[in-house]
Length: 340
Image (cartoon, rainbow, N blue to C red; front, side):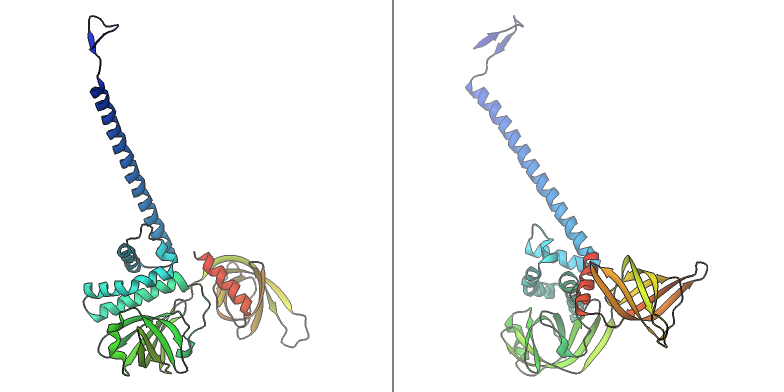
């Protein structure tokens, strides 16, 4: 059929049903390609966003580049669409460890390299999941708490990673992240060197022996052979908190003097403050300040000082001596939230 329109004598062909269907089909294919392209583009943008957020959260927690690479490989191994789940989900982290460790042992040569990776795995767990918890320094192996990640070596060079899952009268139970078939060597007493790594505290070495197995749980005898190998600095956070230092008369005859100060840095154990008058070493000074609507009044002692003579300003570092338990909880939470 022909159509004689305004451009007569030109004759325009009128499309038949096949032509109309072909045009609609091509349009539909183009639309489908566009929709698929936009979907894949959106998915890729989401993947990039999730990865950047994953990187940001991991770095904010204090992981170095190698530790982040380990965490990224764990997320890849799990085929996670949103890898930042690993940053906050300790159960997910633990669930992958047995298979991931077996994978690492196949890919890594030498027990010393595995030992270094286990140390990094312990550090990752500490920084991601337990960095804000309140724990006192270890005085004995018995002070190790349930839920801590530990690793140990044997005299034959074996390296194992585990988590404390309970205790008895003279032993600590370690649930190891390895198949039970690998633990037969611990059916009899075996000498081991146990490593406990605690961020914001220290790294400890404990020489002890195993006391048998139960499935994938190894009983490790509580030992007094504990060495504090390496101490970690307790990180300060920068603050500006007004405070008051009370100077009590040594004779008790004069009224206590209250001196205003500004706290510039603080952690769970110390603070650095600025004051306009010198103070004597060897004395205790109550420091009062308010934080998170909680009023602190802590006996403290000077451990170091710095004087800026041109400005008549003194910067003093005080060690807290007798903070209350509620105060410790509030200060630890405040520091953990400020570091996030």
